[in-house]
Image 1 (cartoon, rainbow, N blue to C red):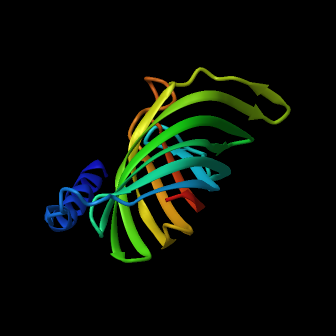
Image 2 (image 1 turned 90 degrees about the vertical axis):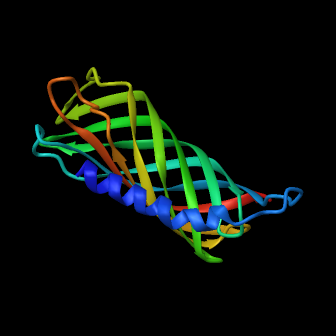
Length: 193
């Protein structure tokens, strides 16, 4: 599976290289957009050694800065709060992260873009709710992985995006291989250009 994502990342870089290679005049002002982003998460924890998990709804909210390097390519850096986790047999695992995705956006059309990059996340809170019992498990505090998706809309006004965060870090403990998978559906409102 990781090989598939490595191939997809390589293809994305090959597609972006002609657009990045185009000369931009040295004195040209780069367009920058600051936006507030919020939306829904659908998250789970999956892996070879874990069974009985299902997708669980959550939410995310944050802010991002998109810097247009050319007319077609931009770099988006973001900071967001993200409620993730998984529905387990007879309970819920709730994971609260501060996530920092950095993605390259390639604009196929002026209002349509694909994006790909990476993210790092810090676990700030965790809770396992098992029927009437609740406790805080001892989970790994860091997560990282790949982020990819697409957006539609005018960056200077608002956009709608769908993105998948594919975790590469083991988030439970050393003996159980389990990784975060999060699908984010969001809307972003530009607050500054």
